Image 1 (cartoon, rainbow, N blue to C red):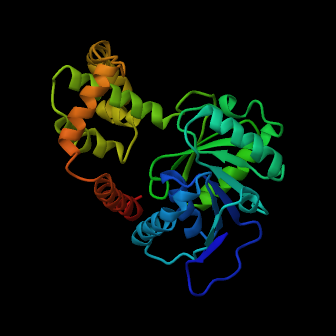
Image 2 (cartoon, rainbow, N blue to C red; image 1 turned 90 degrees about the vertical axis):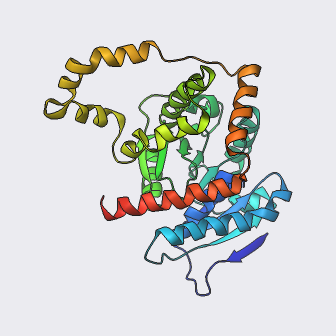
Length: 317
């Protein structure tokens, strides 16, 4: 186990303020930085020890983002890279899982965690699309399991979507994520992809349709969102946007004047499938538009802009 102290002067963390990050990929490193920035001791484990060579650098970059976002210094915890799962989960009060989106892999991991982690410790999955029943229905201590889905990158995007079958665990998890400065929403009903990813998927499905139909190229479709409704949606959601679209009469006036127009748009929305031809077309179009820049450079630009947006929301909440 390799332990890294991130501050020269550190105090002992609060009792039970220790988290195990299981899976050290993009999401896991981002979660690790967020917990660290809020004073948690973090233990990271991944089934592939080779990945540890890049983990520290990824966590440090995310911490730099958080330093740029927060004007006041928050006491930072410490983290350890663990090559033994039992060491990673020993004496932790919370577990955040982020392994690959493979149901068999997740089932095997949760069976092990259920046996090895103290039964009172909540275990949260960052799953992108699986439901609670998909993941946890076969677990022995199933009530302590929950879905806590972040939006990438978790250390910057505040949203966390929770799906849980046990009210005390839901309350405990909500308190933890709100303590990390997250905006927590809770699903009332299971649905694949939760809420945010379903909304994003619906939007991208129409973008794919527009590309297939030759309506516009990749960059113009992206720009239509970034410089149009995306700006509005960064401040209000779609329902409030349409409510305001009705002027003083609100949503009732919108339906009266533009309801038929909305239905016409709905009736002509596309339903593309990701068959081989469509995938090949998308890869060619997107790589032609953005392929000259590395993914890391594009992500750095994205995160820089996200920090600017988040700062503006802090100034004018």
